[in-house]
Length: 270
Ligand SMILES: NC(=O)c1ccc[n+]([C@@H]2O[C@H](COP(=O)([O-])OP(=O)(O)OC[C@H]3O[C@@H](n4cnc5c(N)ncnc54)[C@H](OP(=O)(O)O)[C@@H]3O)[C@@H](O)[C@H]2O)c1
Image 1 (cartoon, helix red, strand yellow):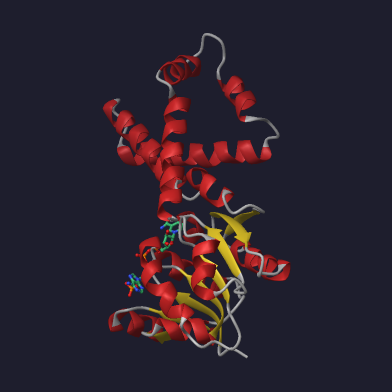
Image 2 (image 1 turned 180 degrees about the vertical axis):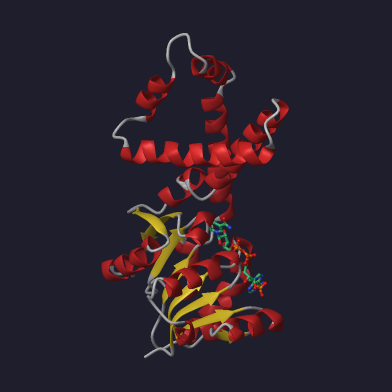
């Protein structure tokens, strides 16, 4: 029997967002969650909020039923061998959110009998609007996967894959996509400003338009192409804009950006 239900090895932005989300959803209480931070300042702040805290990450591995690995991919080479050397009677469920870090790499250090679920969340998860993909290794059970999906479902939507490589291939479309969207919003707001519209007004209008358009896509029963056609009346304004986007190669540009993003995920996994 483990002392804690959930441990976060690396209680940074994502680790904290997931722990807080689980607590907010009523799936666990703060004292059932053990957080690892390197600095005493952060530990003291988290202790004051009711979490259990530690400065020894091996304790997270040995004392928690589920261990969330929420450090940067670059830290895995240092951390995994230390965890692998821990005497641990009952292996925890290991959940990794690190881009590109493979089952093979984790299993090599912790043993192939370790249940591991790789998860790729995105930052809107912090507001309960995340888009998260999950894939399990052979040692993890369907019940463990279902339980973890239920946790991430409280913070947005989830999609389960049955192939590990899809977790890299999907990164541009959810994990990294918020940055694309912010870049799009930034360009639109700057353009609006050039046309005399206050940035605050432009951002408000554009963000609502993104929300509304996303709802049309999800709930309107029409494909993106059908919706584009519906807005592009012949001889109207939108069709003029869309011709420029097409002529300047928006789709090609995005495809190139996505290829680079995916290639980097494979590189990080080496
Ligand atoms: N941000 C995103 O959009 C996003 C999306 C999907 C997945 N992810 C993945 O989430 C993971 C965490 O990202 P983040 O943005 O939450 O990073 P972050 O805020 O920088 O948090 C990193 C955590 O790692 C700890 N840490 C750093 N170096 C360490 C070391 N040498 N040994 C032990 N612990 C160490 C830090 O400890 P201290 O708290 O003591 O500083 C911190 O708690 C990454 O693997 C990333 O790929 C991020």
